[in-house]
Amino acid sequence: MNLIAWPLIVSLLSGALCLALWSLPTWQRRIGLVGSGANLIIALLLFQRVWGDGVQVLHIANWHAPFGISLVADTLSAVMVLMTATMGLSVHFYSWFCMDRDMEKYGFHALFHFLLMGVYSSFLTGDIFNLYVSFEIMLIASFVLLALGNRRAQIEGALKYMALNLFGSFLFLGGAGILYGIVGSLNMADVAVKLSTVDNPSLTTSLALIFLIAFGLKAAVFPFFSWLPASYHTPPSAVSAIFAALLTKVGVYSLMRFFSLIFVQNQEFTHEIIATVGLLGMFFGVLGAMSKNELRRILSFHSISQIGYMVFAFALMTPLSVAGAIFYMIHHSIVKSNLFLISGTIHRAFGSYHLNRIGGLYRSHPLLSAVFLISALSLAGLPPLSGFFSKVFLVKASFVVDRPGAVFIMLLVGMFTLISMTKIFDKGFWRPLSPEHKPVPLDESKAAYVGMMLPIVFLSGLTLAMGLFAPYVFEVFLRAAEELIEPTQYLQRVLGGVD
Image (cartoon, rainbow, N blue to C red; front, side):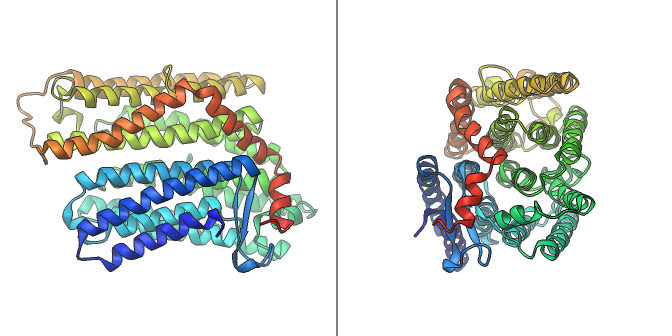
């Protein structure tokens, strides 16, 4: 069978087996880890095939486009699938050592894989309605994961998350219905071809704005970000980490796909809006982060700021800027997820996420301090880490299109990010713990600490490797960018019936 279908099949089977073994959490852990590992191997093979043979297409049940559902893997899709598999395996391994056993009994491992199935499907589908279904799979699984544990803060965060994302789904479904009424198709490639012949700029631009709001809600772009800082700090750290790695990236990916393939008739208007909300998100997100003193709240607001970089860079629509946006997206998934995992490890050692209740980590946990510093400095954009090169590409792309004001904002936000990360290191790692805040560790097991540190060290090494080998990594992202900007091969492979 075509490799494109296997990430969905493995995730579905893994989730189903975990549900069947509801009362056996040990076996759920094993099956979950095997499924995550299998998907990483499949993702590597899929990337290799796409890199060697170009865009891959699978028409479900041999119903060719535009009549059936098509699964499509171009370079961007293959990169996103590989990133998803890497983060899925890393976070799932981490969860072995930190997840509350009661939460495991209520289906954590099954929900984890159903969430991954929705993410894989979002990155691989070539059909708009199937993308909507993928969003709903993610929404249901993520909502239950947020509420798992039934604490008051979790329920409040989950309800805010659900309400705003349901509104985004409503807009998405409404927009899909209008789009189908105009062109009579929901296959992305077919819609792109047919919509280009519609001579009604007002209608197509209005429809583009509907999808922009829908995907903006999913991606937490300015000003639709309130659900993210209200929810990401409430669940277990493993859940926060996989959310930070994947959920908003699906929104950003969808924005990139639709506004490079389908809504290209009035790019001067739509992409200027995208660029503006990106810059505003950068600035206001980092201000929110600087005002907080709780680790995961700080990281949540930084996610809003970093998403601003991605959407702004995409809006410039040059090969350099779009490649930089993809570089930034992968970098952010690795680094931000790792910082959430580090925050969970700190919580296990001190019983708190609040900066006033932790301290002296550089003495008691030197390795944890080192990997935090790597991820924090990468997020701030210091060399030779991945965050530095992602910002370099964005700054260079902004100068090329004569946007010096945007460069100033990016550098200012980078400085504020560094200040925020320095505050965490100063209070949590450098200064000794205040005597009145005696730590109440949740787990003193050395084996658990070692197990939690393994994926953290791996992800820290990954952000360092992305920086050291940035020119080679960038070549991959540049090819993905060129395929987005000039989607001729995508259209030919999907509509030409090539399997």
